[in-house]
Image 1 (cartoon, rainbow, N blue to C red):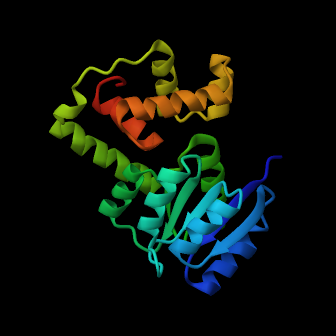
Image 2 (tube, rainbow, N blue to C red; image 1 turned 180 degrees about the vertical axis):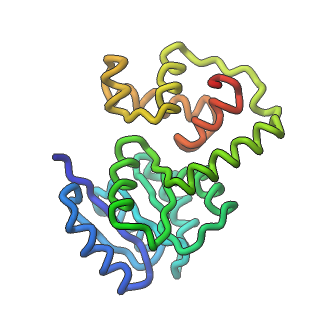
Length: 217
């Protein structure tokens, strides 16, 4: 079974140490590293093969938002799960549109944390029930506004449309690869090209664009 390497960035030492102990009890977890501020977090990602980052937002020296912006630009394959005590809808939407892969409250159950880690690795995102409702609400509001920027013609290849449809159906990269009989590497290249072509930064952006533009109904 493939092990997942993580970094937890949080300035509260007791919480951070408790998280490390918890994470090491899961069979799917490999190495776990720690950072106590945003600057150290960026340095650690550069020094170790981190696959998933558990990121606090309120940290000294550099906060989580600034760290996330830097890491998303520099390490596009890094999966970022924001851990926070705040569930501001505006903040959550902003961070997801920026390119983070999920949001979890710090009082989430351990099982949900593990589900989120596996999901961002396999699907590029994880939506809790609350987050799913929030995203649906946000999408409906934007559809009502009928933003003209999404009415422009977008030329997608047949393969890109197939992959986009399967992403919207929450298929994993492995599942898409098996269904279309192409490699997972090729799927990831298509995802990257779709993000560039559609001007979005994340899978969340791809899904939203698909529905807002009318590509999918």
